Image 1 (cartoon, helix red, strand yellow):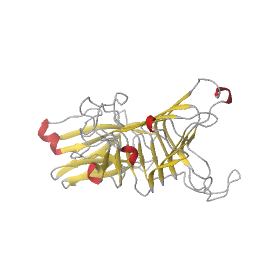
Image 2 (image 1 turned 45 degrees about the vertical axis):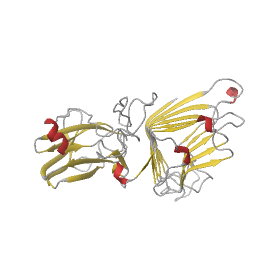
Image 3 (image 1 turned 90 degrees about the horizontal axis):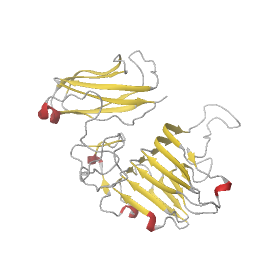
Image 4 (image 1 turned 180 degrees about the horizontal axis):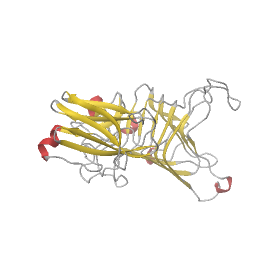
Length: 338
């Protein structure tokens, strides 16, 4: 099973519905895995891939230990570019029980502001966490190990960033304790690496990890730590007027991407300049102008809410955003999902 490019959330109901009362928060988990009873006594392992799936809002109240991702029973689960935030538990990962246990691999994942990042139970046999970014933020702890927690022989955590504290589970030297200097905008949850980030070129090669959250390649011998490679320029129609200009101006990948309903766009200019930041559809038609005018040097952040210049929501699809600053032009693409 593949679940891709989805946002899964819950929140207070605005009115009574389906035997729920207004203000109550329905739903147990964004993803909850179970296997067919006939597979319990066989060698078969179900497989599920979650790619660019975001989950939030699964807070205490309806059930105990409410988790965005409740991965259990005899399943191989690959998470690529998964984002979990604002939950009681981000990832509840469960080992062998009467129906078997999960094997979990996480690559290029991002998680922040969960009360508990990981609840690991019942001697979880396999947990691999590679090139991911975890921000404790308003949360209480990274790992809550219950009923045996995990099998140390099956735990592999490398090339990952942790803010606030680095848990014992991240003892490998390629895992780093990070702070706001590592990122473009940690407070705004934009975890792209700053140009001077200590995470750049600080990782180790991992064969299972071939690219980053945005699809930029991971190059052998120069892996960056965390969900993003730093200092990369990708997108459609990038035009750089020489190395000198490239060092003065930079348009960062938007975050989150894919997104719904809004995404943040950041760029850096190293001198005061007339700037235009515009959004286009794939036909080249102008959709929204976010910036048009003189700006001071420095880092600038803007949010696009998925609306055009008339205030109307635009449809799902790929959009192009273009930065023009003096003679410099750079263009990237982003994916809006309704």
